[in-house]
Amino acid sequence: AQSVTQLGSHVSVSEGALVLLRCNYSSSVPPYLFWYVQYPNQGLQLLLKYTSAATLVKGINGFEAEFKKSETSFHLTKPSAHMSDAAEYFCAVSDQGGKLIFGQGTELSVKP
Amino acid sequence: EAQVTQNPRYLITVTGKKLTVTCSQNMNHEYMSWYRQDPGLGLRQIYYSMNVEVTDKGDVPEGYKVSRKEKRNFPLILESPSPNQTSLYFCASAKRGKNIQYFGAGTRLSVL
Image (cartoon, rainbow over all chains, first blue to last red; front, top):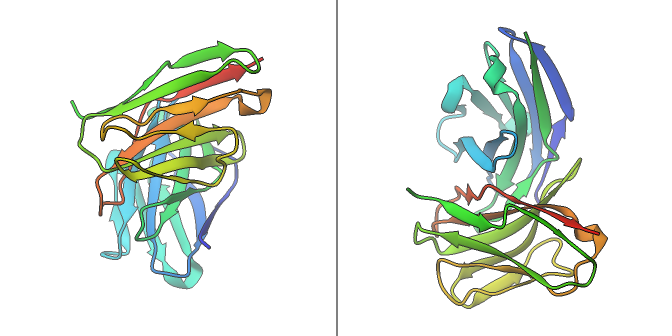
């Protein structure tokens, strides 16, 4: 069975600092991995996805994530946080059938 | 504009009063799904549909019904809502063979 664990339900960074949101997955088959972002009072928006091509995936808004099979991780990073990055972030794993399994979410706060 | 539309966005109801949350997509997607989002639990799948007249249970289907009579619509029905169904609900759709799901803006339901 597939599962996703996000380490840290809340992460707080200062504006301009590195953002690192952690995600570990378990899957018995090569996974598809996703990061979604949810801004207040909005639905989920796809940030980036990994589908077995390049292990370093670039997404929107300056975010990127690296797939590390040996560590079963897919951590999300951004070199310099902006106030507008404050949101909740969800990591998700999917198989060929398309069902998404979500992590618990990480709320990112950005301090001025 | 390609979108997934949910209605209503906010709903307060009382225990036992049947309600329907509508979901419509204009992208001709085969796959549609309903999720509920609860704090600390991420998003959990309620029901999904691979195509017209094809529906299946997700991880938390108890107390919910769905139907897929038309490709664009996938309503969620609560025959007898209970307070433990108070949650934030999302509808999503995807093209068959593609793993990217597109989400509606959400419906916040309170059952008193």
